[in-house]
Length: 227
Image (cartoon, rainbow, N blue to C red; front, side, top):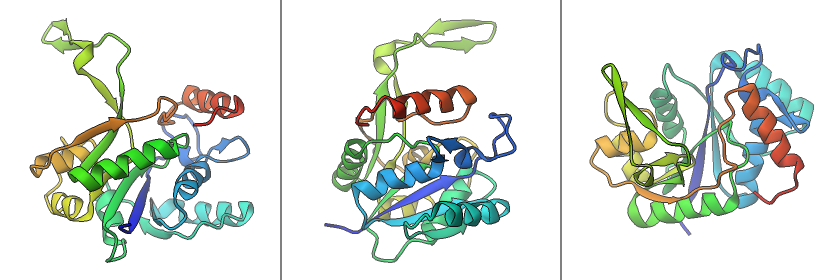
């Protein structure tokens, strides 16, 4: 099996949470959100290389949480950049040379399932680049000047993480200069000419960005469902 790694992107500062605590450090079922995210990947494969990308200003708080909770998953810590693009680029630079498959995951998506991780890695190994998605259930309208139009819902999907890549694909993609149109890692790879394979995500794999997201995640964890 090729050596695999996950780059955990944890750049949030809690703005939309209206909290002084960074969202990845907020309490979820007795532990920081990010610890649950780490555990999801560790349960999937304890031999993954873990790289955590974190703003330098949050390092001291991270180390305090590690000590307080006796967090013991080995990981490489590197610094976040001005934009997600720069943070991921720093994470790539911290990978071991023999890593062949790379997952990039939002640290605030703690309810990702092992099945979603497995599908994403498998699709990336076969096709070069893959992202997990779920169907869009809301009606979506696109604004146009003073009006709008409905988009055909059956053609739309919502993108999640982990976004997975062959090492060569993502290294080549991130050799590019930053562009504000890069909203995720797949958009960077797509700009470099790579095909993005879609695979099935899991609906509970929400990105915690608001107090409502945190409450929903707490309820889902309390429900005892196997995510």
